[in-house]
Amino acid sequence: MSALARTLPASRLNDPIQGVRRFNRFYTRQIGVLQEHLLHSQFSLTEVRVLYELAHRASVTAVELCQELGLDRGYLSRMLQNFERQGWIKTTPSPADRRRIFLSLTNKGRKVFVPLDRRSSQEVAAMLNRLSSPQQHKLLVAMSEIESILGPQARTGETPVAPSSGAKAPQKLAALTARLQAVPFQSTSAHELTGKGTTLRLRSGQGSPPGGRNRVVRPASAPEESLRNQSLLDQSSPSAESREPDYTLRQHRPRDMGWVVQRHGDLYWKEYSYDERFEALVAEIVAEFIQNFDSERERCWIAEKDGERVGAIFLVKKSKTVAKLRLLLVEPSARGLGIGKRLVSECVDFARQAVYKKILLWTQSELHAARRLYEQAGFRRIEQKPHQSWGRKDLVAETWELRL
Image (cartoon, rainbow, N blue to C red; front, side, top):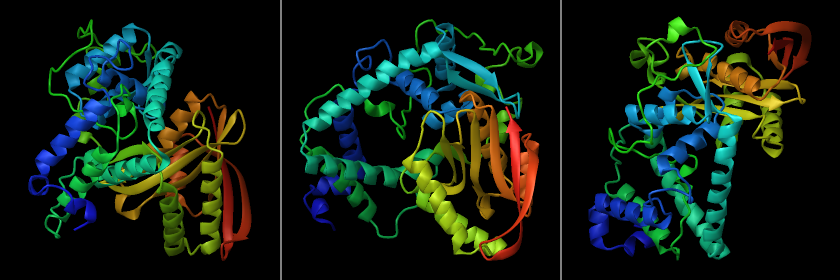
């Protein structure tokens, strides 16, 4: 047992449920989410969180928001209808499947969100400024550990398997919550539950934004007959509920880049005999991406299934008008689920929203599955060139282009 766990009362270790509930009460009070409105604004916690997702995701549907945030369908539908009436969101059919309706913030919506986001950062900064550097480090390490323990289950809905070591997992979680509570916070109105990775669950019918009538939100650019009597939460097709993907997409975070490099090196060696110089090339690409990352015009998506990474893709800026699609990868265990097609589609949709004029990609003629995905997405091959690289003498490089 760790030193921290030994300092906890026996009741806390023997009853992990009460230990977690106590921490929840402490933390929600600490960051001010018990207030009726967030950040001295007209918005509730849930409304700010939905605005945050719409501001930071290029292509998201109402169904995905409902699933990933654990929100009641009716509540989210009323909220989105209110947002649309205010002119804060717009709807766009997916170019790949017009039954999928993407949501995004309008310029007016961003003007509403940006001050909220700035105020949230300022209040968290004020909270952290009251702590010493060692205390800040202690806090962030404990938060990271709790997220790493709860993250996969929270994202996938997977039922955790009981650890073979008996009470060690509850003891570790209890110790971490105690570590957080030991940091000398003062009361604050910071509301960082709008940040990435936080999940708020509301029971059906709990709360609703003003003016929430059951009006159908319809994108003006979509055919009227295809959307009549159709809710945003049932937009994909009449059988959307039975065809929900069993994977999720998210943006990159720490430790993802190492996984991208390692899996490219491993898979391309096993499947195509590319040697370690190929892995070095991938490392250079991801290092450049992180060091020069432009969050407004670049993106990495990570696909997860059952809490494990199973795919990735990058869209990077080549120039003001040209983007590059890079490093598409799908694990063998996850192939055939449509992950590759979805990743390519996300890249194309994001590039359009970022107002690029063209996407380029560089691939090899022997990567048949990837080439089919590019072709299906509308890319066309514009150049071929034989080359000798990565221990192979028979390679043919191809450049593909998609005009947006």
